[in-house]
Amino acid sequence: MTENSEDSPLKFPCEFPIKIMGRDEEALHIEISEIFTRHAPDTKAENIKRRLSKKKNYVSVTVTINATSREQLDNIYRELTASKYTLFVL
Image (cartoon, rainbow, N blue to C red; front, top):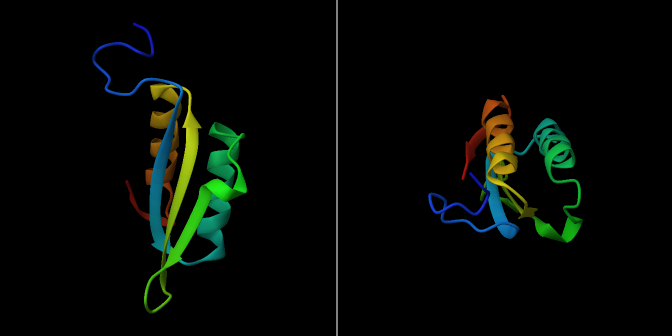
């Protein structure tokens, strides 16, 4: 099976945004940075957007990567959802 198989609506490579939500803590930002450095090291700083909640307790981080495969995306999602600092990943 190839990356562009008919069972996947995605065609690689492609720009793919990943949204992570959690408490606005340094540990969350470090964890996100480490995960993307491992799986998408070519991600540029301008492709990372942060937005604080009204009370500034929570943060939404959107990282747009150049996705190269379904396996890459699966690995990123697996690590992000396993993190104790992450509340949601979309």
